[in-house]
Image 1 (cartoon, one colour):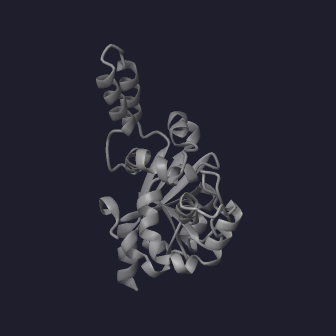
Image 2 (cartoon, helix red, strand yellow):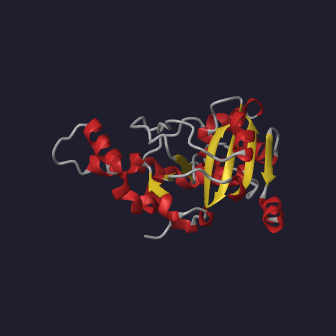
Image 3 (cartoon, rainbow, N blue to C red):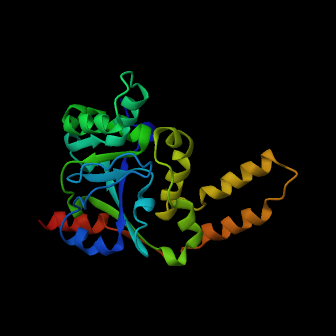
Length: 239
């Protein structure tokens, strides 16, 4: 199975408090990572990566940090599915009325058998696990955001429902937000969404909302993107 939309970047979201530690040492598992769909935490000895929700996971302090990693730089034999993905598949096809805890325990104990489903996990849930520490030399960029200065954006990324159904509806929206945070696109997806609402409801005036999100799109207040690719190349050339 191939990755959808030619996905080549994975992201790790965390508190800014871990920023220096990750760059100086390595990106390590920081404990249990519970999915926002309130199902089960993933194994705490793996790094939790996502294509879509890193800024949600970075929102646990006043400042957040999101690290960008090129998928091609990772050992694909160490990539695993998000346990919540296979849990949802088994749950949906559960014909024996197994309890949630029984399903989860079975998946966790046999996660090695599901290793090759990591592509399905990214395509269907936008998340996966990595069974090793990640060298800072393969981190390409980092986005630091001061959430106190961007309350509107904070409310937009706060607590999305992370499950297979919601992914099918909202994946593009959240991925476009990631692109905007990193400066890869100029317009927040909220602008497009409101314009679509305007077309659906031509009798209602949405101009105030459009103007507001256009201003938010143009402002980079509280957002700082650092590009490490050139520095890493120099480091590798000098080794």
